[in-house]
Image (tube, rainbow, N blue to C red; front, side, top):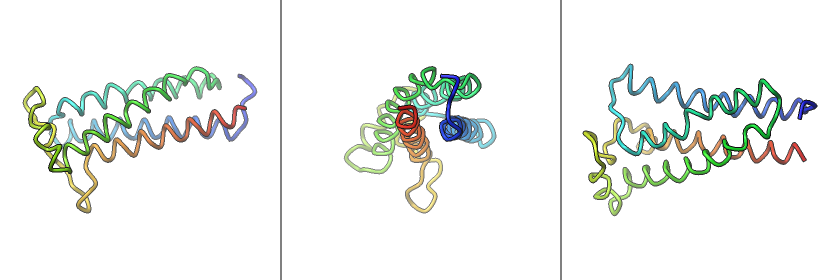
Length: 142
């Protein structure tokens, strides 16, 4: 699909930018701030980090079909992030969060901006933005 519209190119760059900012943010929290990621955080990273490469290659080659795995991964990432957010914020789920394997329980809250914005919430927003942008890309391609 070499004859991609300018709007589709911009949407691909937006998806790549969102994935890059999410990746950089997670690395900032773990490497600069010293926050140790829990098990669910690692799953979210596994789903987010490849999106930087997927959407970057799709933008360079101007081919939306390359980015199809991005739609699937961002969709899965939304569910993992939403579940992680529930584990942190909903009392009925909080007990489940302590059963994560590893040194950090999944119900641990490192940041809590405005009383509701946690790291899984930020990841959820990033996955939703990428998912919606990809749907707009598919609509634009038709």
